[in-house]
Image (tube, rainbow, N blue to C red; front, side, top):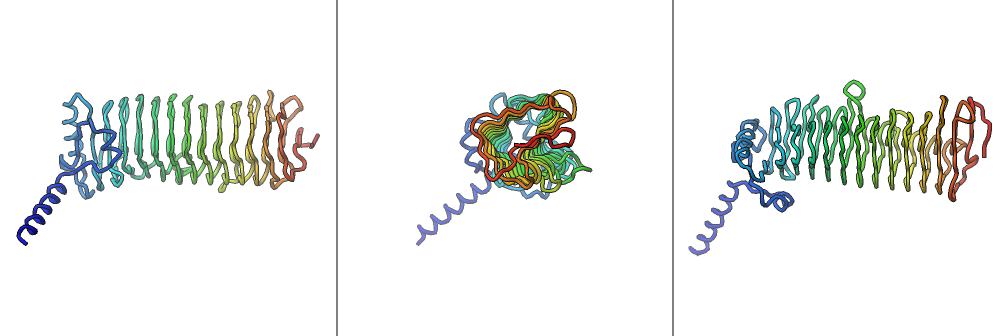
Length: 396
């Protein structure tokens, strides 16, 4: 009996010791960063209940890490943390948090990645207050954001002149924009969810899930963009590659363009967009160029794909258009120049209006239409209509 009680006491002692010594419990963090020196913020006085701000503890941990020339990791174990100021990461530093960890910022910016080339943020939920930016960065390269949630604030992520990679990141509930890219950013995202952003539009910002501006390049795959107040993706003088993604239930467009843009969409499902404003699945305008391959445009509030303005060109191959309420494809050019459509081996189902593809121009030379491959039409009549100055001139 005494031996049994002795064993129980040793076991309880071991549990108490382990409980008092914070561990990296996030398996992915432990495996990926085993050779890093870990600076656990709770060991520097951070309160894991969130009752007290942990800015002083973070500063102490960062000062200690600065003395180390090797690999270093600032770690938030499971808990809730409050940060009044900004966490400024150095180049090649890792900021890691447990999956259950929630870090709430009460200042104007929670994380600053400016100049932090090679930095990594892995894990945790990062929340901003109303009017704040959760993650901000300028002039950094090879930045990685992994396995994390970015919530609330005015802007979820705002990057300028930055190269970054995102994987398994959820960006939600920002009142202006989920992620804004400007100044020739180059950002790749995989396996991400960008949802329910832009609720403050128009008074509190842009309303988009992602904004790609000022010659930035955005490459996103295997992701979903839904429930954003305006566009799932807004491209303005930028480039977007969208592959194996779902863009749905966005208030305006699944993807919208302005000025001259380049858009490539492959194996995407674009559906039920335009709920609030009766808009389209995708719009390509202003002299932009777009290629759409193996995409589905279905059940959008107005048109599946809208292609407007002079010098705008769309190549549409092996796409399916179904249950769009106005037209499957609508193309308009009332200016000089030419709008161009190439339709190759697509399938068209009946939409609410009688014409599946409508082209509306001010003169016959203002459009170019090429029909290639074997296109299929299901209860669609007429297939195409051509309007010149609001007069129906030809239908097929």
